[in-house]
Length: 265
Image 1 (tube, rainbow, N blue to C red):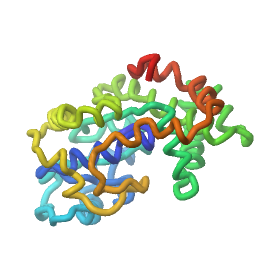
Image 2 (image 1 turned 180 degrees about the vertical axis):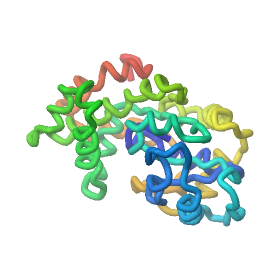
Image 3 (image 1 turned 120 degrees about the horizontal axis):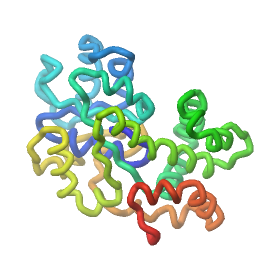
């Protein structure tokens, strides 16, 4: 799961991770220690430790992990969004899942947890320090480097850069499954089947009942026991001012159109 934080990577991971033949690995399970470190394969010894931690998020114990291919490993990895070249060299070649979400919802969500999770400073630092991004997004990086930039503007810039990076995965042959979070929420059965097919799995009804299979909270404070619902789709209307929305859309509107959002979203 690649893309911008607060765009549905946790929910998507839990839907696929609820499958009997898969295991959901979150960022906090030690994910980044075993993949995309410039090698052509995952580190199996480190992976065993990560898998042991990942299995703790399940209500019922998963079967013993013996080999790398015992499960389809479902990794939530938004911090690897700019490391598509390294991911393309991994063996076996990973399947990329790329949820995107309305910029206004993402910004409102980031702001709501900013006192508990340092998403803005961490993501700003990662973008500013990436030379390729500096060449492509010079204007946007100037905004991030300005200490006077309001948090909602900073969050919108991060969304623009991370949500638009799906093209880089396509360019290196990884063919990401791009979809809008809002459509997943509105048609979960359809998209669960699409996700299963993309991952080489047969659809299981329990993918729609991840909240009964998972426990605890995700890295972004998302409750794993919360069922799929639409309550968060328009919450931004109550959390952002008209002036903030106008500034956010000034940054994100073009990318929203590229991602298939219509004028009346």
